[in-house]
Amino acid sequence: MIKIALPKGRIADETLEIFRKIFALDFQFEDRKLILDEGNFQFLMVRNQDIPTYVTEGAADIGIVGLDVLEEHKVDVVRLLDMRIGQCKVCVGIREQDVLDYTRPELKIATKMPNIARNYFSQKAIALKIIKLYGSIELAPLVGLADAIVDVVETGTTMKQNGLKVAETIMQSSAYLIANKNSFITKKAEILSLYHKIKTQINQK
Image (cartoon, rainbow, N blue to C red; front, side, top):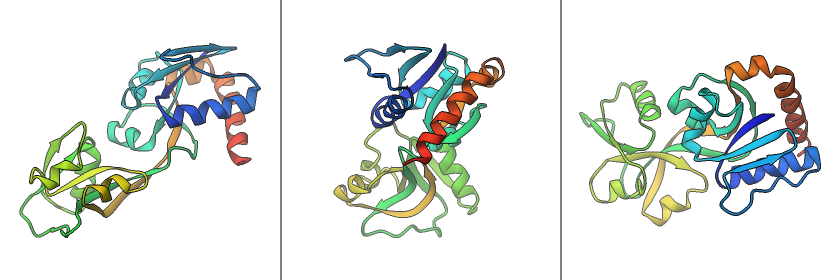
């Protein structure tokens, strides 16, 4: 059996749809269930940020997770395939009336992705103060908590509705198929077979 960690929400739905097309089986979670057993697969419904932990610790053989999460946590996994779903950007956001002022002695950045933010601004030799937040990040510049935010942007609607704009794009992101390194050795044939089937299905879109 191959254990697969999926992030809750749209990416899980799109991944299960891919599996339905490949195997002609009804891959569907029951309401509020966190585990789905179907054929030779066991799907685990997991919070997006926790998927690298499930995979690296071997609780899941493979997982689907955003590239932004992989880059933030620098997890030691096998990156198998860009799934081309869950596409978004990691951006620097500021108030609509502001400009990103690099002449300041220090920029205050609110984010849930401190490593990506530090790496990006260190390449520009900009001193930072990171303010780690877990939600409502758009609020930070509006109340003077931060000069800017670093956050995931899909359509930009949330930023616009809160009086913010995208100042710079740090990276493009989409969901990746990843594998536990030990599982990739012990279950290599099964994982590669699944990889090729998923890749073929994605290329048919």
